[in-house]
Image (cartoon, rainbow, N blue to C red):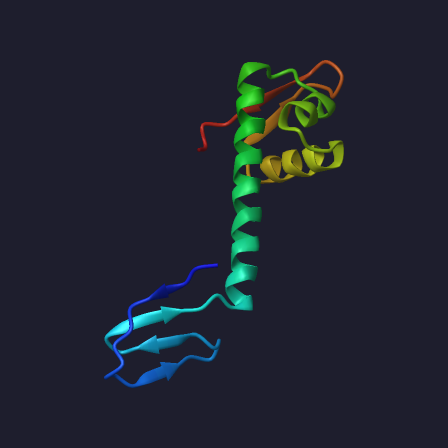
Length: 111
């Protein structure tokens, strides 16, 4: 929760639609449900970006990794690893060369 106070009691106070109070010469910020939801979404986005970076790093080290091995290295479930890899394939970040059993992953120059 963020609580920042710089009060100027001579200025009129305005309210926005989320319930936060704003002073003309200072601010009073109150954590709202929207802020808490935003924090949750931000955490999820950061987690996805970190997960993608871990998968890419693992594939750079060993392009022959299986979905199961990628899941173990990234500390995620097999299904999540599969989903992440499918998304990266659709975006052209990675490409599978050869068969599932004997093939390898190729990283594009896309960053």
